[in-house]
Image 1 (cartoon, rainbow, N blue to C red):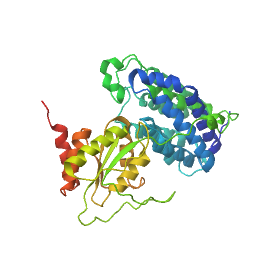
Image 2: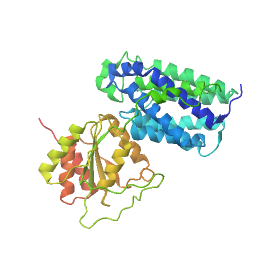
Image 3: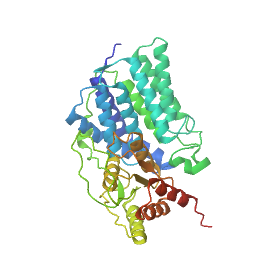
Image 4: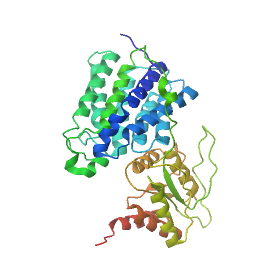
Length: 386
């Protein structure tokens, strides 16, 4: 069967993936409840459903533009680790596919391989760690191998889907070494990784998109609740910076302000945690902390970028994260600072949230440079309490 990897194909892929994530949301959440925070299925359902409406409005003209648009949407709006991780997969694929209206089968293999590499860098994960990499890596390898053996794109995608499912099943006897499940240690053994399971579904949707009879839009999207940008950020100091218009790059090379300071951004899943930490730091260092948006539990790349812009005075910005997806989201922003409209001298502090925030703000408030602020957070990480 001959299949053209054009924009219509990738629209069928995304529509099918959305349909599956909606149908399997409860199952994925159950998998996540056993070893995580029970939000994986719900987050994917919200993210892909709302992305379907976005691409219906914007109608990207090429496969690369389509995947990039959906990846950006997931990164900017989905709470939990799903947003930055799945956003990275689709954005990286879109970048590799470029502006070609029709994708050649070998180019799709390169895009899948590049997506795996990006996820590994973002999550600092490898095959055998019981993560989505255990499904994605064998899928990319199987696809490339099938093409090399003379198979057509349909056979190659079939092989990729089978390998992805086998990889996801293989996470059951593994002890998780990355992600929230790793906190459980040996208790994570015996549970399938939810990210690997959903990744297998995603690759299977790619194979199923070879059926030209599938719809290009998930028709159930209109019935789903509009996804919201979930995330909490606290910025110091809280000044409102004008945001660039849609499609316009932000000017990230700010001139240092006279008597300016290193900016500090606190990224937490919880409004209460962020606000309490900000209040504590304010009481200790007499700095104005604010800029908390309304929202639920989770993190949002767009809100983080805005907070970074608010505190950027041209002398660098240090970001402190509480855990999990907050770290992944900021690491994705760090991977392409210019493309994300943030200053080049942007750093993530490897420090406990509360102690690191206070140390960073104290040092910044007395005029310490970015190196000094980062060093102060390092000291906070090593501070012994007993």
